[in-house]
Image (cartoon, rainbow, N blue to C red; front, side, top):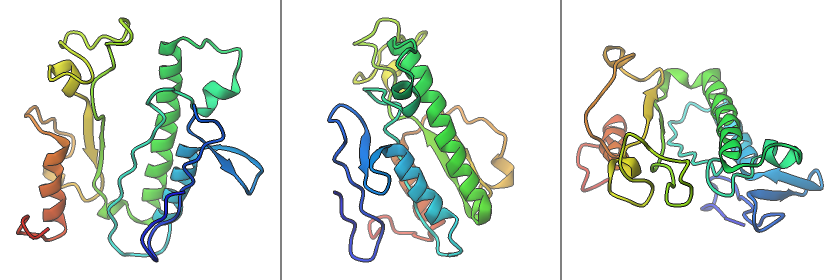
Length: 193
């Protein structure tokens, strides 16, 4: 189990019911629970609290990564289990998770929120020829555009009105967000951050 610093966060049991899945043993129900469901429940609890303390939250779900074992795929043994169909099911499940987090933010934190949604890399084309990033060259683990150019969006009530609904075509990397978030927090010297 992953233990947080004293008085902060919550422990997450990372030992799965099965080493090939993202399922965790849920001692309260005596069964398995998907890791992302547990994490979103914790996020919902934190976000719907009445605390007005600023928070920085990174939620990096496992759902859209191999072995694509989201609850819908696991529950329906008769479903089409091709890799593409499992990915579609996982993305649908991920959409529901993001919806839950957004709804929790809407309770009392949306006006002070900047929500960034982004992928970490392109599709793993080296494994499956059907997962091409066309017209981009390359795939996950390559420096070609197909491996590093991914969709992303930023939203939230704290986002300045002037940039809402606009498209930015310039280059950026998720690491570039560090300076942006530091500025939001009032940090002016990144060497000290």
